[in-house]
Image (cartoon, rainbow, N blue to C red):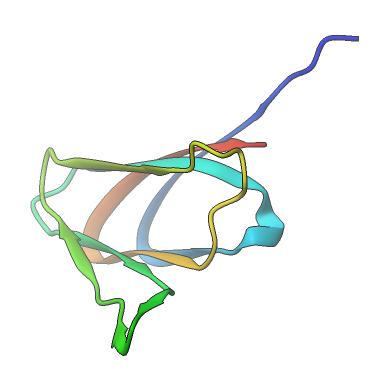
Length: 92
C-alpha cells in the first residue's frame, strides 16, 4: 500500500476556519483573491507576547508549515465580508 497525504481545499468568504493540532495539518497555504484583506492569527505566545492578526492582501499568499512533520497548532484564518481566501492544506 502506498503512503499518501491528504489534501484539503476550500474557498471561504465571510467565514473563518480554525485549525488545531488534532486536525493533522502539516502545511497550509492561503491566497487572497479579493480586494478586501483576510487575516491569519496564530494561537501561540512568545514570552509574554500573544499572537496578533496578520493581514493577507489581494493577490498575496502565505504558507505556514512544519519541517518536523508535526501538525500545526492553533491557527485561525478569517475572511471578513467581501473577502475570499483560497485555502490548501496538507494533512500528515
